[in-house]
Length: 166
Ligand SMILES: [Zn+2]
View 1 (tube, helix red, strand yellow):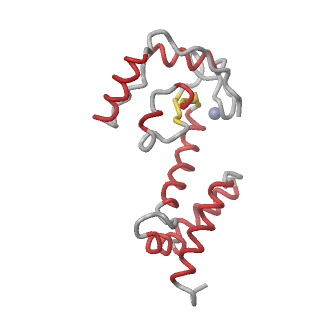
View 2 (view 1 turned 90 degrees about the horizontal axis):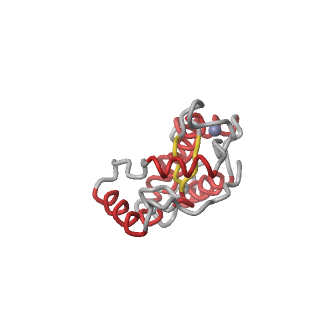
């Protein structure tokens, strides 16, 4: 993973413009409001036209550049348009990140603070699809520390409601 040398944000992206974009996104979460040429160009320059995860070339003439939101945008609306929250990625890394993020989001529904956590945790930890996904991610070396913590936490919750089950 490369560290981006963040530049000054593009001139076009004024405070006012940021507010407008954030508002637009609040109203319609499906809309690609960040997809502005000046934002994309800026990101590509910051990363030297590389995917920030695997460092393959992206952008003009190379693989398509996707923009990954470091803090997932559904929850962190405020950070949505901030440039620090955007990472250029190649299609491959984008897909991988989506799988990982999806998996974490599901696990979060089973942790202590979540509504119906014991119920979700129990389903998750006994669901074959989940167990298969877990072993796939481990085999591909994609099972990271955050997943491990979430997994352990949901497992503890399941055990606490079903003390006699393995
Ligand atoms: Zn990549």
